[in-house]
Each structure stands twice: as C-alpha cells, then as structure tokens.
Image 1 (tube, rainbow, N blue to C red):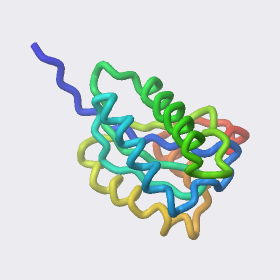
Image 2 (image 1 turned 45 degrees about the vertical axis):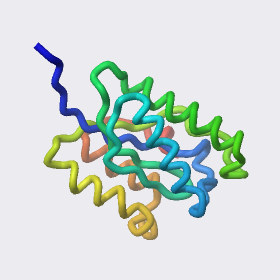
Image 3 (image 1 turned 90 degrees about the horizontal axis):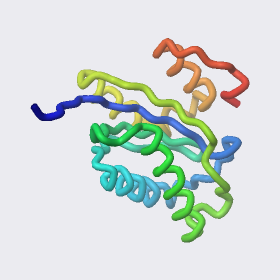
Length: 148
C-alpha cells in the first residue's frame, strides 16, 4: 500500500519582538524564497502573505517531513538569505515559536482568501488580537504573556 495524506497547515510566525521590519517592496521576494524552501521539502504552497511583523503560510507537507523541521528550515534559511542579501535592513530574526493549525480541504479556499487579505484586515486588527482569535477558534490554550 502507498502512503496517502491530506493535511493542510496554516502556519503563523512573527519577526523577533514583532518588529515591523518586513517592508512591502521586498516582501514578494521573501514569499518566493519561502515558496522555494517549501518546494525543496516536497510541500505544496497554497498561499503565503503577511505584513510588516508576521507571516501566514498555508501549505501541505510530504508525509516524510515533520512540521517543526519545515518551520525551522523556513526560518533558518530565510533569515540567512535576508541578512546575506540585505533584503530588510532592520530585520534581526524570526520569533522563537510559531503557531500551526491543521485544516480540512473544505477550509482551504476560505483560508486562501483570508491570507490573501492580510493587509486589509490588519488595518483594523492587531497581530496579537488576530492570533488570540485564531487560537481561541482552534481551541488552543495559551499563555497571553507569550503573545506579546
């Protein structure tokens, strides 16, 4: 028998201390670079977007790839690329942790639209409030001190 999976991950993480360093004019370059990391890990990127202080990634993974390893690769490789190429001059690092949620295939299209519209809805909603809402909707217990 072959291995069959259908696991869609919504991954969210921010810049260190939520510093607004991901300037808009180079963000698409970062998204393409991360897309390459996901492809090299045999994943499929459905959507990536973000604003100055955080990213959202909607992806599926190959069954041999661990989620934590993928996130580590994305953060490590993109940090190195950002610094070597001076993509975002004020960027230091990504935050230490991340949030990740699994979703059904029926939720994929609405999530793609949600991620696509990050700039719009962050005009009225902070990242901290957004993350609280996502965590609560997913039923994830959290310590508010780690959301700052």
